[in-house]
Length: 627
Image: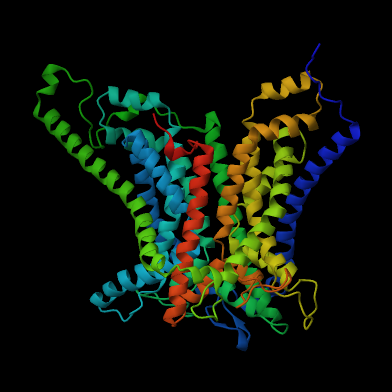
C-alpha cells in the first residue's frame, strides 16, 4: 500500500541555523547603512569641523590650490537644475497621470505604462550622451544663436534641467497615477451625477483628494533630480563660476565629486574631506526627501487625517467657475445665465481634456527621440570587431569593456542575491522579529541614495581606505570595489522584490506544510521560495538591469583600462564608463565607438526590462491598471 511521503522532521539545529542566517542578512543590511553614514562622516570630519573657516557653503570661490573651498556655486547648480526639472516635470507628469487615470482607455494606459517603464530604465549615461549631442547641440544651440547668446554648444544649466525633467517624468507620472486611482470611485460618480463635467470632477474632486500623494511623488522626484550625476555632468558645461544668464554653464555637487574625488592624492586631505562632506550633504538631502515622502504617505493612510470631501464640494461656489447646471429643471435650464454657464463649462472641459492629452503625449515623446537618435547614430557602428577588438586595435572595439561589465555585474549579483534573499525571508517569514522594521526602513532608504554617494562610500573603504594615513598607498581601483558599489545598489531592489514575491504566496500553502509536520525552514525552502521563484527571478533581472548601466560609482571604484583586467584586483573597464569617456572625445572614431556602445547598452537594458515584463505577466503597476 502506497502512502504519501511525509517530510522528515527537521533538527532544531537546522532551523536555528536558518533563522540565524536570515537575521545575519538583516544585520548586514543595517551594517552597510551604518557604515555608509559612519565612513562618510569620519572622512568628512576635517571639513565639517572647520566649515566656517573653509566657507564651504558661504563662498563661491573654489580654488583648492589656494586652499579655498567655497562650494556655493555647486549648490546653486544643483538647485537651479533641479528647480528647472521640477517646473517642467511636475505639471507634465501630473497632467499625464490625470489623463491616464480619468480619461484614457485601458489599452492606452497599458501601452503608456510600458513606455514609461522603458523611459525610466534608460541609463543616465545614455540620457547624458543624447542630451549632449541632440538636445544641447541640435536643439538649444540654434535657439541661443537666434536669441543672440554666445553659446555654440548649447550646454549649460538649462540643458541639464531639461534632461533631468525627462528623467524624473516617469516617476512623477506613475506615482501620481497610483494616488489618483486610490481616490474612491463614489466621489467621481457623485460629482458627475450632480452635473459636473469631467474636468470639474478632476479639478475639484480627484486632485484635492490626491494632493498629499502627489506632493510625496514630487518630493521623491526632487531627491532623484538632486542626486543625478552622469547626465548632468555630460551636459552642464562644467564651469566653476556663477552665471545667472539663460545660456549659463555651471556645475553641480554630484558632478564635482565624480570628476575630482578620484584625482585627490595623499596630500589633498582637505579637498578630499570637502568633497566627501558634499557627498554627505547629498545623502542628507536624499534621506530628508524620502522620510518626508514616507511621512506624507503615512499621514494619508490615517483615516482621521483626510479632509472629508463631500459631494456638495463638486458643485461650484459663487466665486468659482460654475459647472454645468446640476440636474436642472426645465425652467432653470432655459435661463440665459444657465446656458452661458453650461457652454463655458463644456468649452473648458474640451480645452482641458485636450491639454491633458498633450501632457500624456509629451511624457512618452522623449523615449522615441532618445531611442531613435541612439539607433540612428549607433546601430550602424556595431560590427563584429566591436565585440572582439580592443580600443587600441584597428578597427577599435570595446571587447574589454564588455568583459568588465559582465564581471562587475556578476560579482555584484553574487554578493547581493543571497544577502537580499535571506533578508527578504526575514521580512516575510519572521514578521514579528524586532529587526524587521529597521531592516525594511533601511532597505528603502538605501534604495534611494544617489549612486555617486555609494561610489564615494566604496572608494573610501576599498580604493583609498579611510584608515590609511596621508602618504600611504591605497588598494587602487579594482573589480572588487566596483562590484561592491553595484552590489549595494542592487541589494534594496532584490530585498523589496523578493519580499513582495514571498508575501504573495497564499498563507494556506504554509499552513498545509505545517500541518504535514514541516518546520518553518522546510516550509520556506520547499514551499514559499519555489512558489515565489518566478517573481523573485523577475526582481533579480530588474536589479541587474538597474546596475548594468551605472557609471558614476564605477568612475570612483573600478576605473578604466585599455586592456582586459588580468585579475579582480586590477582596474576593470566597463561599457558605461567608456560610453561616457569616449562621448566627450574629439576623435570621431572613438565617438563612433561610444555611439555603438550606447546602442548596445540600451538594447541590453531594454531587453532585460522587456524580459521582466514578459516573465511577470501583466505587472501590477499603477499606470497599467484599468477600470
